[in-house]
Image (tube, rainbow, N blue to C red; front, side, top):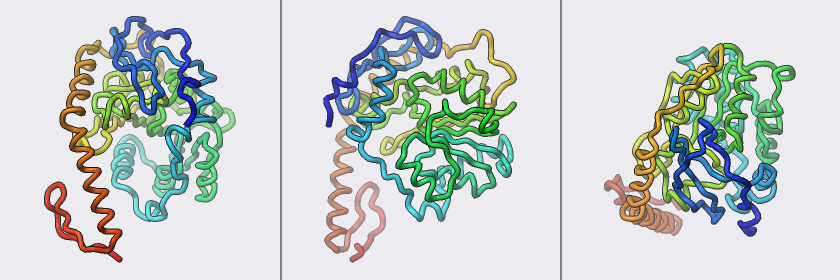
Length: 334
């Protein structure tokens, strides 16, 4: 793994990406894999973001040269079984989208489709789909799966060349942008009048695993709460009409999913989220303490038990599934 200091040389402090304020409170100075930058919360609108950031060229070079070293190689090929049965999580998202407009014949752009699971099922539902994906490995999979795509970034999709879309879908993408305002301006330019923008991001009010050593990441310059995501969408002329804030299961990530409609105009004076800085800051402090005292021991005990069970199954012996609620007995397969 390369020296983290190569990527953590920061430039001058920046104003809040949401409201432009300069008054901030530090939330954390640690991040996953030792790629430590300072995360702050805006005192005016409660937006959580990295400040200061490395230079944009450094940040973008990290994705090209070091992302795989730190975050591991993501398997680029979707499992065949996943293309035979639509996952329940996608069924729910499609149902929400269909409440806004029929999907049959709808032009849909996915930003960062990865191996193309959402694109695949959107096409099965009658959408005319296009993905824009920067990873050459994922582009290879999209080609093999026969899914239309462009290799590049959102900035390289132009209305004059690729037309307008009725739906833009971004799952765990917006938090990665160096400037989320720029991304939303580009989305607005690519959507037809009344078009739909669907965004899924981690929910800063519902962290997963260790706040400082896992949840907060170098590659997430922005962290959203339900209020600040809605405020950012409002700022760029999108009216949110569906919000799912995730559940309460500590064993898996609980994400924020918002669907918003493009309005005719961008507001001259956006209504930013009411300041809730102290509430968010205390919520994160409480989670940090709860993780150390309660959740971390549960997490590691659960991981150890599951690892032990896999080892016994691999040895070909019957196993009683007594973990976590005394579920039914299962027989190991040879």
